[in-house]
Image (tube, rainbow, N blue to C red; front, side):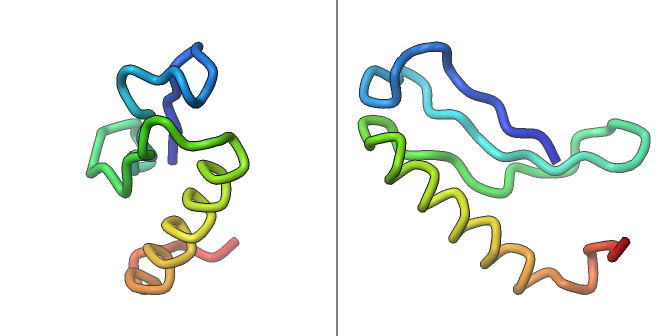
Length: 66
């Protein structure tokens, strides 16, 4: 999994960052969720945690457990 982000402060994001899923060879599979621009850093982090947890819960069969 890889999260991209903009260098600007969260409130100044022009393009929201996204969380993407890649396979073991580094091939892109899908975008899991995209952040909403203009939120505080706390709000972005909270939303990212909820989105990621919800995605893992909904796709548990696709997640390798270590």
